[in-house]
Image (cartoon, rainbow, N blue to C red; front, side, top):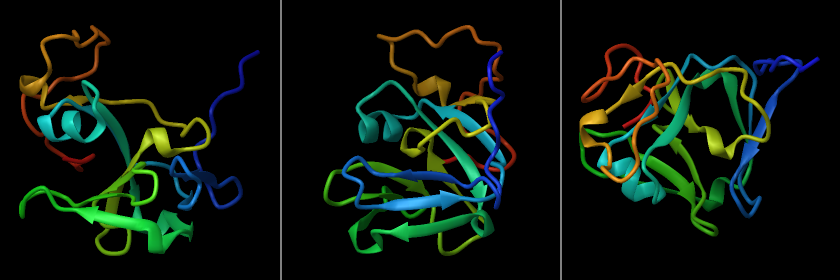
Length: 152
């Protein structure tokens, strides 16, 4: 039988980090939402057709190591800052994990199944033409979706 993914909790924290391992963190609360973003910022930041992130409450996050390696890029004053490892370039967060109520974690930075599945696709009007968006039944939004933001 397949094992059901467990959401993170204080008893079973979910670790994560960058490619070189210099930045490590733990998530200790279930994620609030998860989704794909097809905006041009995400395309250029990742070098892929879309990115996937999940939102977590700041109270459910702990930076374990590597604070000195985290760099921030602010695409424009209206968007969330993008945080990455300056040594390896690994994408980590959108939003500030120190301030605010919640922020987004790049799912590719996690060590195991996060216990949440994508719930939407946003910025599909900016999707690349060379890779079709799968017909997966997820709600699609031409621009940003309404509700708690996953990232931008």
